[in-house]
Image (tube, rainbow, N blue to C red; front, side):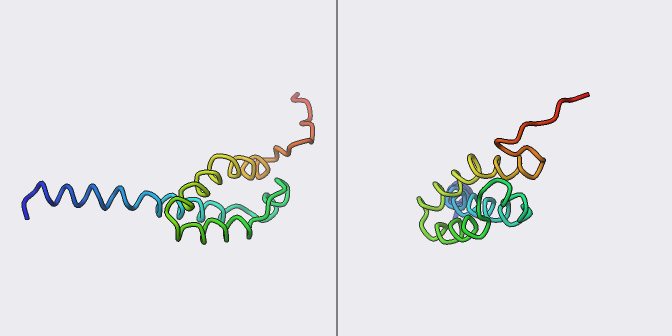
Length: 94
């Protein structure tokens, strides 16, 4: 094998690992968020973790669901974790 073939194989393997990496990122992020933050955001941690884990078996489904979680759900749970709850007015700053 020459260097060009090795680099091509490395590039293909790296590109093929993106869907799995995205799903693992979403799954680990969902697992590290506390249960109370999920409850405050109105979401269920177990449901999202199971959905991301099982959708990883299909490449397109895994990419779509992991992306949806990371773009839409993760910010809601992170906001609840920081004390920003939708529908609850924030106290005035002094």
